[in-house]
Every structure is written in structure tokens, then in C-alpha cells.
Image (cartoon, rainbow, N blue to C red; front, side):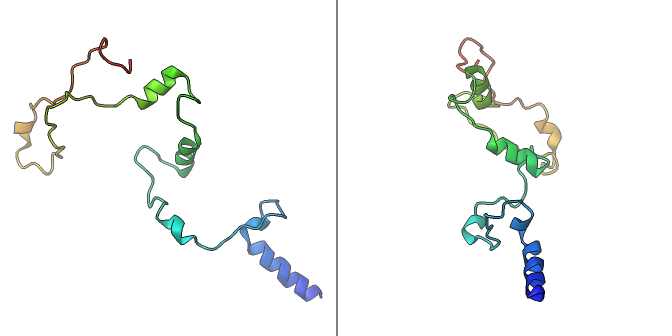
Length: 120
């Protein structure tokens, strides 16, 4: 009986749910195949750690949770363009053989007009 109890305790020590302090909870340690398509292989660009990414996802976003000024700042687009004007595709300097001719090209960005901007 002591041998069986020792084997059982050794098996329980290997489980993830034994270290949580919740004896009534059983964590499923099998891989969920349907959740694999929803997980990211790498972290998105601005995040450097998984904790930063998890904190940003856990933070509620919307008018109900944030002040109106914070909500406006959060949903404000980074770049505004004039409607109907074509946008040049992005090119890296290395892929352009003669990048000096593209150096003086002006981007098609909308001029900054505070009176017409609904986000300011």
C-alpha cells in the first residue's frame, strides 16, 4: 500500500495541476487541436514578451470601459490619406536598385486639418 501511494504521489507531482494549490481542479494536459489554429507562432511586432501581449489582450477596449478621450486616441488611425488618391506600395531600400530617385518622392498623406478631423 505504501508503494502504491508513493507511485501515485510521484505521478501527481508530475502533473501541472498539482502545483497550483487547487486540489479540486483537474487540468487537461492533452493538446487541443482546434486551438492550434488560434495560437500565434511568434509574438506580434510591438510586444517583446508574452506577458506584455497577454496584458494587452486582457485589457478591455471600448467606449464602455475607457474615457472618451482615451477611446478616441486608441482608435485614431496612424496614417490618413486623401480619398480617391492611389497609395504607392511600400518598397524597401534594398529591393530598389536605384533608390536615390525615390528619395524625394512625397507620400500621399492628407494634410493635417484639425477642424475637419473627427478624432481630435
